[in-house]
Image 1 (tube, rainbow, N blue to C red):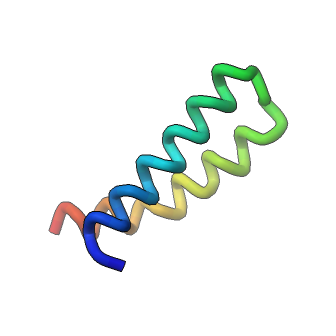
Image 2: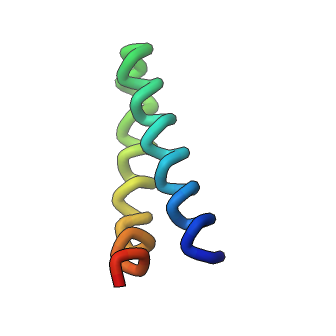
Length: 48
């Protein structure tokens, strides 16, 4: 996975989380937030 693909994956998760917030889908939000936290290492790799 190159840097662009990693960044795109993070952006996609953030967009999905925003949509859940907009839809007030509180039941699904924790799972998406967990996915975002798990991709934090991708962000750290991008920064390096």
